[in-house]
Image (cartoon, rainbow, N blue to C red; front, top):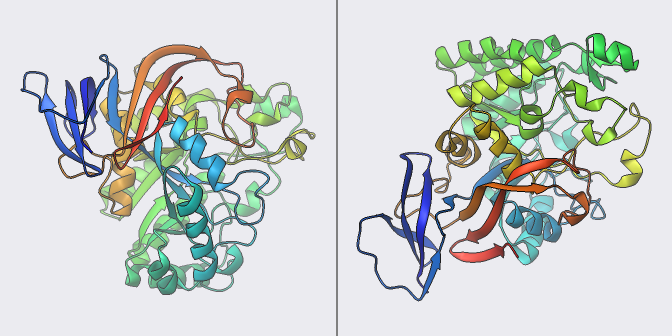
Length: 425
């Protein structure tokens, strides 16, 4: 069946904004029309009423708690949340119980996702067995089973010899490795960023230099091995010169940032509100602004939700003891819109970070409004105001820091391979 989306404000991360229409045939974008072109007939015509039409979001670093903790998030509930948030591809983390470190575990997760999930799911696998940093995972077999990248998530390997061997083998296999830039000894037990505010609250804290120190180590390892390396979430301004030098030197490095570190700061944990406890901890406002500007300038490549479901029992604890993490699949788009409204970037630049650059990193065909690209699309109103109600979220866990926050930007429709998987009531 053919579907024609008309009267749309096209957000094209490669060619900027313009008004036009998109024709979908056989799950692909068949043609993109300008607003003066004669439009063809189609089995279904949807008037976008001047709202934005963009490639679906490709979210790298989503935690779906299957296997092991299905009570926190299943592929079904994560898929529903993603569709409602305009996320058409979830790139899921391997930090499950057990970890996704074997072809069998990866295939189990892939089958579950294919059976029940409304959106596309691409699995990542652990770089080392059980994410323990002692023995390399079966990278070749895992790639054959469908792994798109390798990461030990927030476990940082302290053994440079083992880590270097893993990176060298990954480079030989053409694999993408994703790292976490937080020096593990300094970061151990910390739940806030060092400074007067953390001291006032009496919380164990870590300096932003822990991020820079680990980043320097990782860049040296990339220079030594030549592996394609992505940093999952930078958060501190002191890291940006290191990243800039690495890119200027031609190292195959990209960097991401979580939406929470782009829109929240350390003051939000006042009152020991554990829904604001994330990893790495929230930073001072000057760091938040620096990270947003780095996305606008193209130095930081990717924005992700770092969706991490935690149940009430693990969050309703003293701040030091509470679990880290926040859900983000449904709040990613409206939170990201605040960056546009604040003037940090335009919509086309934002969509490079949300869709085009993640597709490029993983070698996907999506992230573009172009003929032949998959019809993974989102229609949204960038200005629609609403008050976030965490109990209305489709995620099984409701641990969002944006509860009761006034936000702008609402998803109206989501399409995956041309099929509508979500429509706002």
